Figure 1 (cartoon, each protein chain N blue to C red):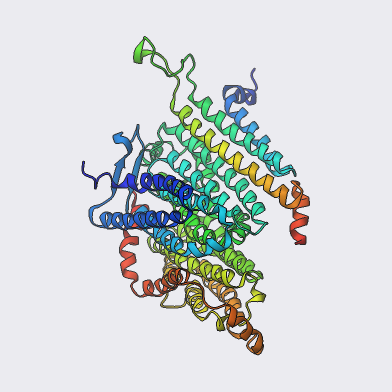
Figure 2: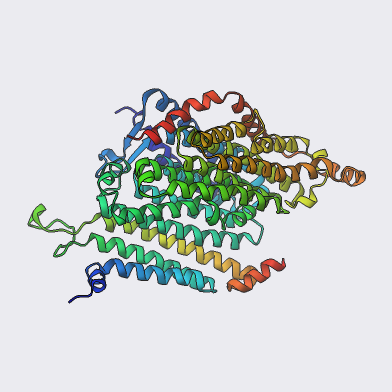
Length: 125
Length: 501
C-alpha cells in the first residue's frame, strides 16, 4: 500500500523541489531584514524557476543535444528550455548586480542596510 | 524582400545600435548624445505611425526574425491593438524626449547624463519590444530589459531616497518577473510552444488542466504587480515620487500602459475570452478589485501633501479604470478601457510634466510651497487645469469620452453599482485635482509681496519643456472633439481581442 501523497510527491518530485526552493526564497525575501539577504532570497527564488525549466527539459535516457554519429535518431533532451534559461540567468545576474550596487549606495547614504533602521531614518527625514 | 518588409525589426535593431552610438558619442563629446537620442526616438515614432497606418489599411503585419517561421523562430506581430499601443507609447516617448533635455541637465549629476540617455533609450526599446513581439519568452526578455533600465533610472535622481525607492521596486519587479517566467514555463510544459498564436490554438484542448490554471494566475499576478494594479501597487508611489521628472513622465505614462497591454494580450489573445468566462470568475474578481482600486487610489491621492505623490496615487486609481474595462469585457467597455490607455497616458504625462516644471523652477514638489504659483507660471497651471479636467472627466475632453464608454459598457452589462463607482471615482478626482488648483490659483493671493519677490526669480520654464506639455494638454481636448478618429483604431482592436475566434 503506497500512500497517495507519497505517490504524488515522488512521481513529480522535481516540481516539488522547485516549489520548496521557491518558497524558501520567498520567505527570505519577505522575512529577512537585511537587504543583502533579501537579494539572496530573490536569487534562490529565481534559481528555483531555472531548475524547474531545466527539469522539464529532461528526457529519460536522453543525451546532450549535440550532433551525434547516430544523427537525428539519437535520443536528445529538449534543448530549448536550456537556451531560455541561459537568457534568464543573464537577466538574473544583471538584476543582482543592480540590486547590490543600490545596496552600496543605500549604505553610503544612510549607514545601514537593515530594513527597519532604514524605515526609521526615512520617516525621520 | 524589399526594405519595407524588413521595417518591423528596425524598430528594435536601430535603437539598440543608437544606444551604443550614444555611448560612443558621449565618450567623444557629451553634447552629441542628446541629438542622437532625440533623432532615434523621432525615427521610432514615425515608424510606429507608419505601422499604424499600414495596419489600418492592409491588415496585420507579421515579421519572422531571421526568416525562421514561428514554431522555430521569433515572430513580431503588429495588429490593430499593438499598433495602437505602439503609436501611443512612441508619441509619449517623443514628447518626453523633447521635455527631458532641460530637466535632466538640472536633476541628473553632469557626469551621468551619457549613461542616462543610454538607459532611457534602452527603456524605450524594452517597451517597444514588449508591444510588438509575438513570442511569450521574448516578451519576458524585453520586460526585463525595460525593468532593469527603469530601476537604474529611478535611482539616478538626486533625491537620496530614490535608492530605497528603486530597491523596493527592484525586489517587487523581479518577483513579478519571476512569476511571469514561471507562468510561461507552465504554458510551455502544456503546449510545447512559445508563440502566442500557436499557444492560443494549442491551449484550447487543455483548458481543464491545473497547469494551465496556475500559469494563468501566475501571469495575471505578475503583470498586475508590473502594472501597479491596486493591492500590488506598493512600489509605485515611492518610485514615481523619487524618480527624476522626465523618468516619472515616461514610466507613469508608457511603462504602466505597456504592462497593462501585456496583461490584456495574455487575457484575450493567449487565453481566449471563453476561457476567462468559463473557467474562473476572473472577470468578476478584476471588476471588484478595480472598483476598490478606483476608490482607494483616489482617496489616498487626496491625502497626499506632495504633488508628485498625489499624481502617483491618482495613477493607481486610473489603472483601475483601465482594468475595469477589461473586467466588464464587453465591446463598449473594452473600447472605453483602451481609449483610457491613450487618454490616461496623455493627461498623466501632462500633469507630471507640470510637476516636473514646478520642480525645475521652484526646486520643490510640496503642495504647501506652491501658494499662488499661477501668477508666476500661468501657462503651466492652465495646462494642469486642462489635463486635470480631462482626469476628472469633464466634457469634451478625452477623459470624459473614455469614462462615458466605460459607464455605457457597465450599463449594458447591467452592472449599475459599478457604474456608480466610476462616477464616485470621478468625484474623488475632482477633490485631488482641486487641491492643486486651489493652492495655485486661490491660496496666498493676499500675500502679495512674497509673490512679487518670487516672480522676479522664477518665470515659466524653457520652451522645450513647455511645448510638449502644452501639446499633450491640447491633445486631451482636441482628441475629445475628434474621438471618431481614435475610435476607428480602437474599434478594430477591441473586436480583435473579443472576437478572437
